[in-house]
Length: 492
Image 1 (tube, helix red, strand yellow):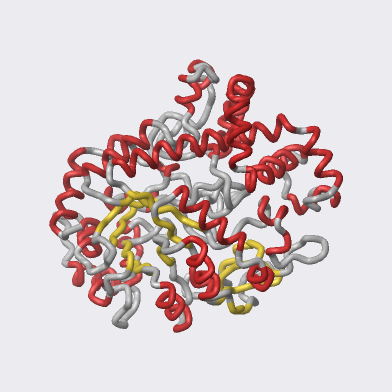
Image 2 (tube, rainbow, N blue to C red; image 1 turned 90 degrees about the horizontal axis):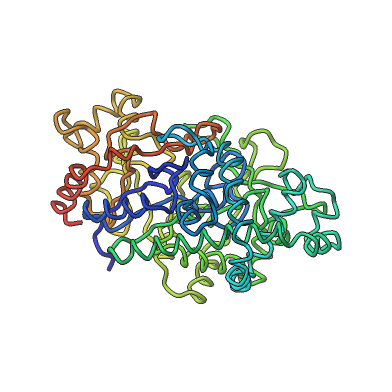
């Protein structure tokens, strides 16, 4: 039986700090202490992968590598690999409540290269040991990033043909001549994993579990597609035949065109789903609980012809279903997985959730947008679910209240007994904290009562997302005590 609990959703990037983006430094440890004061048991974050074009954590160059932006520079300064003056004189973004990814791309990465050059002789044995331990994924990643760098960071699908074939003579020759460039990428992963494992250990010691996030798909421009083309639906020139998305709905008239390559599930089945098993195994090294994004895609997924400009002319295709999860269970045992089953819902999706036994998700914002007795209303929850006011893809609740229809807003006010004196956002928090769901999670923005300016992501848009950071001044003892009081009241 799962323990009744609650937690806060805030990505690493949103932590406060002085180096342009939230990282694994002291403010991450301070946030764990805040969670403890607030009587929380979970910290939920977004994917930790190295981000690509658009800066989305759901689009990564690797399903296994971590994001170098999260490396704490203070540790590199203390070790003597960087000078404090050099770091302080580097422009990593002048606003402490928003992220300038272009400056991180050029300037933080330049600092990490300098730290590598200053430390590579000192760390050579440690880097070599780390490389050998992680070789199964790290060799391909370091090689992919080094080749990408040599071609001015263009997609691997635009590389000369001899480099697009992973086992070609050109690739092997490149590897033998570019060890130092590859070792820089090994260096970034060494510090990423070293620092993350220290932070996770600290959180676990304090009674905080980490909920991580696993995107179902990988990016088209990724080492996974380049080094494992057989597991994707690619043609003889290694170009995608079909790509992922979701069909038109009330939010998007032409659907969402995600662009990720589609898996060749029959080939994956012939391998015993070995790639997926290693991906899940790796995830549970990083996290205590794993939320799998777009879980309904394992039942059936929407595929679109490569080259289509919208997702509206796609089709539903049957996914691997319970066979995949039976194999994962055989290999890895019982795992603490949350199934993100939002989107176009069918009986077969529900049946797959029941077969796995995984808890699914309920979004309180969705409960008031229908005249029907919605499954998202707390009185319809069973215990085996995780409830949210909204996720990173939703509006902060104060923005939702401002923009919702009058009927939806009035329904929410009546159902949750909202009042202005307490703050409408706190009524939503109480709505999910008091529910029967074994786990209740709210975005940090919804505890702060902030609006549109703090939204993390608006699906199907690019350029304005993933930038929000919390002002350190907002993480007060008073706020922690208020969250703790509600948590104790509702037995979480």
